Image (cartoon, rainbow, N blue to C red; front, top):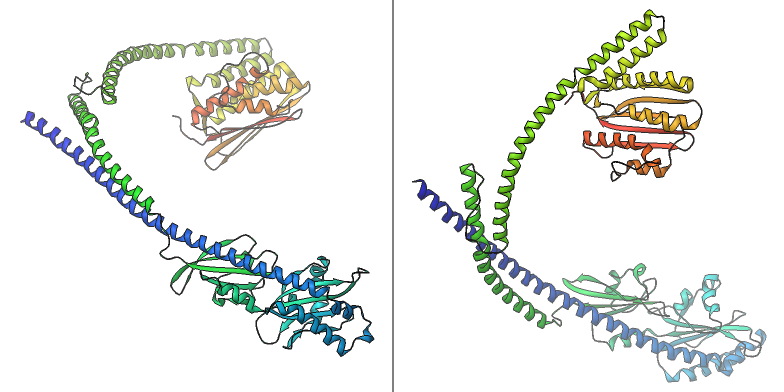
Length: 590
């Protein structure tokens, strides 16, 4: 029965692996197909959008070039008008000599120049004394207050006789009925005296811009002023153009109008205060079908590759791994670590089998060695128990010597021996590795009492032990090395009396211990070396070895607490050094 059961399990397991591989293959083909369809859809949409963007950019560039060329021709006409003899005579004549005949002659002379075009709506000539003439019989509204503003005059004067393009003369000249006009303005200077004699404003009819837009059949076009004043074209595009976004560089965005998607391209015309906009529908534009064919070929090649790879994986990976795992399971159920003897292809799976057999041999060797080590540990523990007896002899001897000193009247010697005995009792702490913080404070107090016998009054100690901190459990002997370091490498090196202050408090779930001395201080370089976890465990002789006790204490606390950030050091050279330990709050010994 058991044999039949063992034969069925491998077949069932193998079928599940094969089924899993088939599911993986099916999943890969499904993902690839979906990715292909998504890629085709994305490519088509991208190409249609890019095609619309290119068409809109070319259209708006063509419109700008066409308008610029026409404006340039009208600038030349304005220059001819400016140097016309009748115009010059009108501007040079004294105010009292200006009469209707002179104004009519000047007007007829200007109209003769404008006979070459029908797109100039009117020409205004302003004298410096305020008199002016107009070549058109249409009604116009003039804003003389606007003309008097510095912000209006500066751009025109800045050109020094050159032409400047404006809309409605920069808000100074309006046609009473009709759309805004494109105005070419110039300051007129006397050719002899180079003094300013007047200003010329040539208003170009909106039909010029209408004609340029009608000549372009691609997309919906519109022209606006910089303040979004409608000039020509599709007025509905005004709802989608933000003048704050317009620059001389062409930009675009996708809009939806009447349930259709458009690429809206817009820009600020160069040297003209006009915003040009073009909307091209994103429709059945040009698509790179060659890319789709390439993707289809790739998916077919990939599908065939998956089939071939599946067969190879089943023969060389899946089946050998199944046989290997079955042998491992039998070994586990038998409770033995034995070598596996299977015919497996000489590849990574075969290497896995050989590695397992090598591991089994290594584990068996380590198992035997572990037994031997356990015996060594037992003997070491017995030796430690024996060593615990020796401190009692030391305590008894110190106590006997103390009584002898008391009988001899040497009370100071008795006090010193009593302090030394107390120090070693706390120091040894019955072999404990963890002690209450209060006992650690007693060790430091005894240690400092003994040091004062040697150094006298140059050492003072202060304690500010926070409530509830004395019962906290800490690693033994983390304060005494720091205090010793403060004496020998801090206060004593300063050559004058000093104070060692110890305080503690609990914040959150952490015990904070501060040891501060008024010694020579430490440099930042030395502090960084102490806090560096990569510091060598046994530094060479020299200044680096002076802080080894502190570094070793920090490493002990890191190991004991399982934390890295357990210490902070603050120091000022020649003034003080303060070390702060941050230890997790514990109330019970491990």
